[in-house]
Length: 118
Image (cartoon, rainbow, N blue to C red; front, side, top):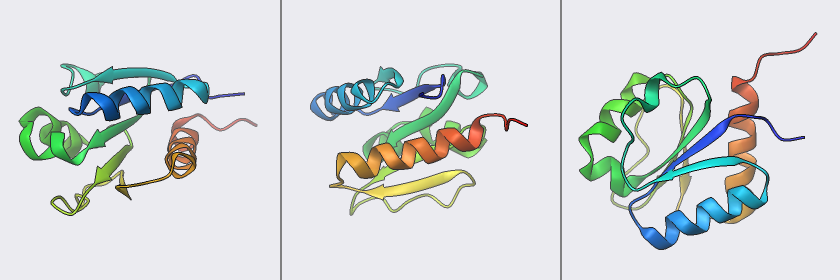
């Protein structure tokens, strides 16, 4: 059974955004896709993980500010131009990556945000 948290995917590249949204949806995740950092994202309680592309981090001030808030775990899609930021709660995965690597990382991150039972 999949966790019931939303995965926010923030990627400017339309093809990559569509691919990630599809792959995570197939894995049973609720996905909210956006080309830009959505207003109010850091305050939302339904978000289990944020997937942030390095391009967004480089050019989108709201993404940089949201990342430093540290309220949600972030999976940072890094490339040779942008090393993984050293903020709390940020995990990096280098591009190119395999789908199973991405899904495993997100599952771990979401599991850490869910309340423990028993």
